Amino acid sequence: MNTHGGIFVSLGSNMGEAERHLEAARQALLSRGLEILAESSIYLTEPQGYRSQPWFCNQVLQLGAGPEWTPERLLDLLLEEEARLGRVRSQDPEYRFGPRVIDMDLLLFGASVVQTARLWLPHPRLAERAFVLVPLAEIAPDLVLPDGRSVQELLRCLAYRVEGRRIFQ
Image (cartoon, rainbow, N blue to C red; front, side, top):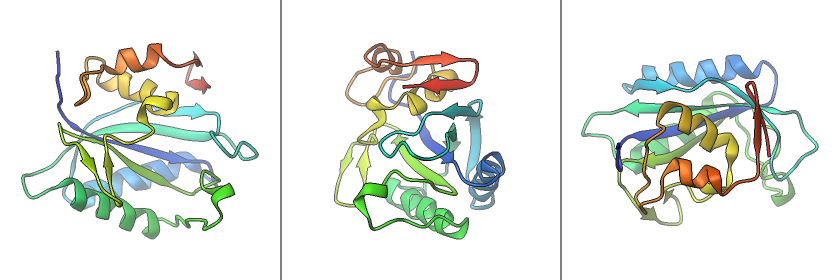
């Protein structure tokens, strides 16, 4: 079993040509010296939180990175690339989960457990989101989180369904 391994990032977009935005995000990661070791299929997913918006295209990547990469450095890169690719963060809490050109979330960084104002690992809402867990299970079905729970266990705790590449939750 693959225990506590890997760097995983989720990508999401629901504005414009969403699949092209995901491709731009993947290319941005490659151009910054990271390697994509695995990528899930792209899923069409219901919006969470703020529901009056288009469905999202979501994908999870497993990344390879050299020893110079830390969780904080990767978070900085993700935030920089989101801004460069056109992400605008709303200051209105009602729209926190609103439409976005690109969303790049650090889900896991190996066995790292981090709880600071800037960064929380594993991602604090990972266990609640079928749109993250389904693609994560596709590329890392035996993955075990630092707390000992498997991706499969987390999925069994959620009410969701998958129809083809559509995730309903």
